[in-house]
Amino acid sequence: MNAVIIDTNGILGLLLDDIPQQADKVEQLIKKSKRDQRKIIIPEAVVFEINFILNKYYKVQKKEIIEKLKSLLATSYFFVESKDIFSQALLHYDANNISLVDCFLIAKAKLGNAELFTFDKKLQKLK
Image (tube, rainbow, N blue to C red; front, side, top):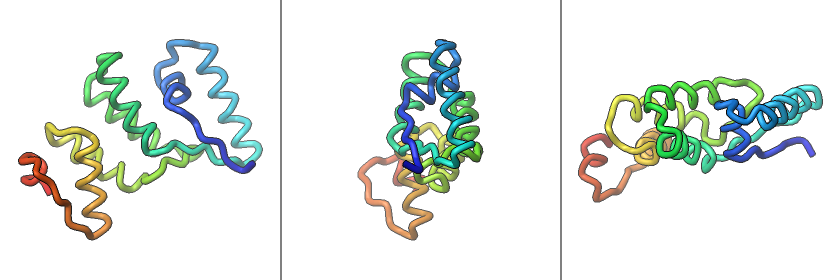
């Protein structure tokens, strides 16, 4: 296998280091993946779930969540699905009081040269 998909708990273990044994295992995975030249894939759904869990359960401030997500996007050994879209989405997320999902839709439409159809009034103003 030339890739491994990491789940939300794995990334949270690394970001929070609240369960040292789990963080150590993720760090071992990273080292092994670098050595074996295997991609570590972070699916789109995991990024959204990280945002949700950090916000709702850990009460992490939005600015800090954005910084953590930006660090994931910038890390060379992680392959984040839709990385370019998330990079743009985080700019919208930082500047506006709307969900990361809505920001992702705005960025996806813009980068994909597509129209965004929505009934959401806030989203209509920003698109």
